[in-house]
Image (cartoon, rainbow, N blue to C red; front, side):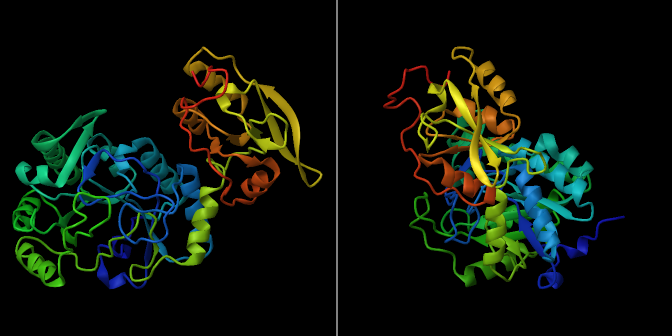
Length: 419
């Protein structure tokens, strides 16, 4: 059955009060640094792009969408817009879209990106029937772009200044051409930054039109503490109206954008409800792959009462589960010997394939990445095991104190660490 594009509230203002959207915050990393952006996680106090109260795995994102649909929320669109860039996190983004398309074949799918890394994925996006792609293009003159972006990272190589802006623009143009070649709807977002690109909006609109873009969305910059543009004044409504009037001579303008958070949910004109925030928190505290049967939790503990051991120093892990209505240590499992590098953590992940989470007082980035990839939720904390298990099995946030010491700093263990 063909998708009904008229149900997309961002592209059809006539249905903005009837159909809603949900943004899935599965993409925490970003590959550029804009002068107006400060990404925040675990934040419920700000309503702007780059902000989310939780970050989800693809499996958790599907769990969340299922919950919203089953509860009767009028969601017609699933989008991915951060809190970083979807294609600085391509594995998470694409797997999320695959899961949603398979489970919800009638759902509209869209993504919003800076355009730097989307190119290699456009063909599959079209296969998945992602109907709308948004690219944020703030300048078509690299000299202006150099004033907007602090850096651009391509394959771990950071670029700055003119070189960064030139690369980003080149990738954006390539992406625009490929998107239209695959017959997808293309929207261009432009952040209006007073004194930086406000005189350049018409040029962006004209160029976007020449490349076949379907809609243009001029968004007023929001001054954000801790950013390069924090001391600039926010554009006035009159400035935005004037810019839209000028850009509108080239292409249609979107005028009802809400500058949505990366975890926005519901109708455009409504804020995210407490009920929805609760559903998001439950999803974030579900197993990384909620459909898998993983009844146990692994714990790095010295005496079986507290989480108080660094993973790299633990010779064995206690495996907890529910028995007779109580959380009990059911067995212990030896950890692989140190010194084998990545193979050590691959073996550990296999040995914990029936565990939904692992609780440790400290852990390095390499084992964290391997364990999460294998579907384990890695919880870094210190505190009572029983209370933490209660929260994990109830799908609640773990609120135990976190260790602030980075792995390798002031380590009091044997020095074997996470290698």
